[in-house]
Length: 450
Image 1 (cartoon, rainbow, N blue to C red):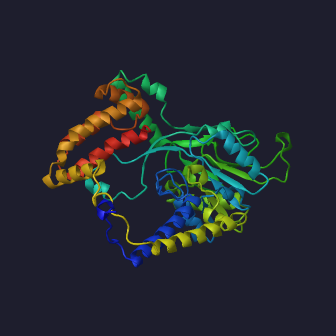
Image 2 (cartoon, rainbow, N blue to C red):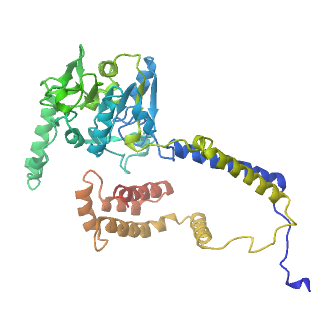
């Protein structure tokens, strides 16, 4: 038989040490992936602008965590469901749209496990607009946000008795009244000025737990009628800002249940609040009152805010009954690895050394545009592409800019219009300006869930 029909063989491009190094690194990376997945760390930023214990924005509680640690508390931030079963003080910061039935189930269990402190969210938040000057953007730290309109979450009222409270925002704008004045600019401006003046004169003082001070914002979340709950902190008008509750027979709870504390005015404890010495002292006092003193450990839950993990897969793999299968898998991997080092001859050469395809074509095209300095030519096509995506997300038939602006004004009233962002992209000339304007358009798609 002639050797002309046999496939050609080439030398191995890697030495044995290089292959061994790649196998070891890959093995370690695989187990690292299992670990990070198990603890819920999948790359999402902790400081994402939401109201939880890992956030650095005004509405976050990272300042409270640091404050309690400085006071000598045993503080932890839990990403596991098992953290909800701690016998110490559990601090819950549910997001605005959290399911009331799930929260009720958690509180019913906590009534017989340990004390619970619930801090309700209050602020709508948004990032900094793309037209902010560079000197301001450079000073903005990761996780910083801007506060929008205040509101109270529905789950405060929808959780089952006895945990439900009827909270409202006092001093906020009446949207129905202002909408009725949209056709009369002068009357609308006068109403805005009158509201601003009222807020300046509004009494923002609070008192409770033998302390007093002032809130950082005149728009206050409070409870008009606390009912059977103990009022811990109240405002100048007597409305409850923080309440606590113990079990009662009429709701099926015995007298030996654990205390549940609800803070409906988060500006008493968030980063916005603890920037003031009086409010910082009150925040510590509320934690002490909710957790029966300083001896109880404090656990800030992050699972309700989307940072939940599961049982550690790496640990689970080395526990019975999975231990036998894990050992067999390790032995099999060692045998396969040893066999690969003792293979017969070099591998059969097949295929080109450099793969061709769509990815390579895109990479070459992008490199050519960058080398030619023609990045600005991508602005108009990107604007058209973004319009089509936004129209699809908003359910519009055609990607008409005016129609997109009208729909966005309803869905995202606080955000700049699509036309304004598109104009910024068209007017951009420097690469940094083009990228910033393009990110602003992409941000709209993200907020619409595109």
